[in-house]
Image (cartoon, rainbow, N blue to C red; front, side):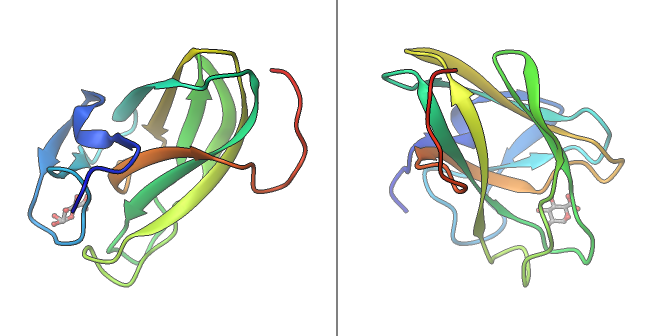
Length: 138
Ligand code: GCU
């Protein structure tokens, strides 16, 4: 499918591989995190103006258990152990929104696995409205 937002396969991958062995991804593939603590994907995004945003992470998790990840912005964890619960199978993608304050212009957003199972399969990141409302400077 067409590229959407920031594709995980184009991000900086630490302990993970670009894969295409499941359907429904956008762009040219997705990231299959290595099944270890600390595997990560780091996106560089342009926020435009500073403010609170929703970080929409599109993922699949075809197992029965959560694949939590720490979400950091510009090197600081903003949500520790964000939940990425099971989806129906590895071909079924869903979007999980984590809210964060971004600075104007360039920001780095990293999603780091916190369990030995590694992260879910990660397809893309888009910036949107925060899920819980509110706004303001970073
Ligand atoms: C399977 C699946 C992969 C997934 C992996 C995992 O091998 O095909 O796409 O990444 O499980 O458990 O992480």
